[in-house]
Image (cartoon, rainbow, N blue to C red):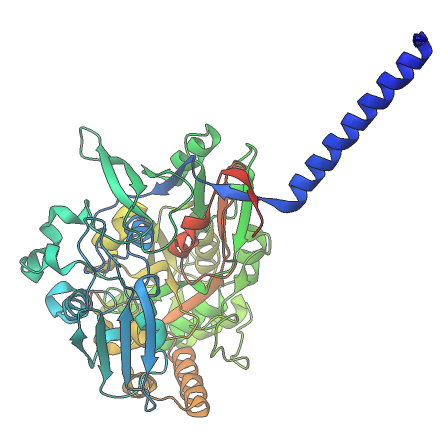
Length: 544
């Protein structure tokens, strides 16, 4: 037998190696062809929030962002636990069928009783729920354990949206507690919900400040388990602290309206600009400052407000000028609504006509008999960077027309309880969130001038009240458009509010997390509406 030469051996060896490599390539290519990369369980995520959670309870209708973020995750909208919602032909009856096996995190079944209990508690005046007006004239009855019927006295154009957004509270936990005492319940920080996560631990410092709320996967969740195993919220007293924590990578996510945050966050991150139907405005409290009762004084402030300057200098044109209660990206926006131009000359003229004459110090005063009234205004605002810059620009122009202006910053977490609830302000710079289908009644009907109503300008106009009340029940699109037009025109004429701008919501995340986000949401908490789909880890999965 002839021995192979060295050259022949090298050729055969090379051919074998090539064949093996080719086979490996075919196998690997085939594997990647019949599989795909999919999210898998694992990972941890920490969200940074300015403020403190107090009422993680849908029965109390908290307006605090720290509460609403957790409620979104622990008590998602009704659609999460419903099989079907059938609407009667006349639009007055909604039959809700719950998913079989839907349960709270403590294992108790979610039944029609829980729906009935939740709605009736929200309707109870003692609950002071911020959304009580949305459930006015709505009756709910049990059909069986899994079905409840919602009956309307009159049709409501957007009731399906209201119903789908219902957050259901466990009757077996709260029904023995008198409604006025709900705020005292320990379950407000240890909620029993049905969302993708449940509260595992609340970490509190010695002074009572809640440092962190740690969540765990809710094994009773009616849908697919969330991918991220450990989810938590960490709390800060100011945005400066929260941004510094993001810089140190102590937190993985942070949301804000502040357009300067992107410059301040220099570590590697993903940023998202999310459009929202939220407008910031100056709400006038004419009770606290009588000079504001003169419509010419309010119009003078409007002429002295340079909204384009605010949008350009503070937001680098990433916000939109607001001219009325309904934003341009919301159904019902009145395109022909007059956009008042900036004019210090016109503002001065209106103040002269109102009887406020300039003095030697460039201020203004009005003399009526022995009464001397100076033109003064205190602007209250949440202590947030971009709002501070806004009031400083406003003050500069208001001082130029003779106002003595004082600026009053309040810590963000205190603004609701200490300022808004008792209506302790002359002018308040604050934001209002409008839904995709606008309901102006909470913000401009005279019945909502006191807390928990959202009429921050204490506005009262009988014609507007009548229009807003009829809008709640009118399903005719053309009539609705005309009524909304009249409401907006009246508000512009009366000027109880000075609308300023509508900014984007900025959300920052570390690059290790792949979120599922909608780029048009109605309020910040909705960034967590698909949190169960977020993921950090992946695995190859065979295609079906």
